[in-house]
Image 1 (spheres, rainbow, N blue to C red):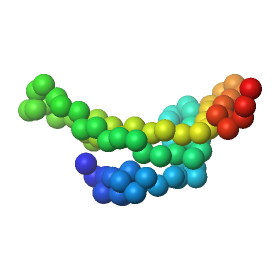
Image 2 (tube, rainbow, N blue to C red):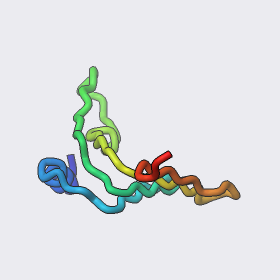
Image 3 (cartoon, rainbow, N blue to C red):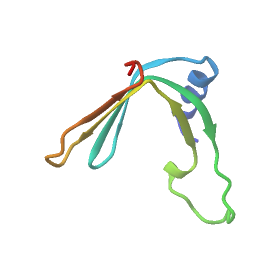
Image 4 (tube, helix red, strand yellow):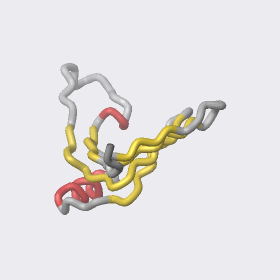
Length: 87
């Protein structure tokens, strides 16, 4: 857990809808719309003496209405999927 953990738990308990959440990796930007935090998991490690990177200590589960993937380092086109559109 870190400084953001309390805010994440508060948003989940309040059933807050976050209009836009952006997640960046080294090669991709994920933009999620109408996001709700559906769960928080704290993995149980078989060897508790082993040190783990901070990103492995808390898993946040999200639900969302739309997603856009944009590749930041290449010539690939962005992709969008939106569950608000019928068809």
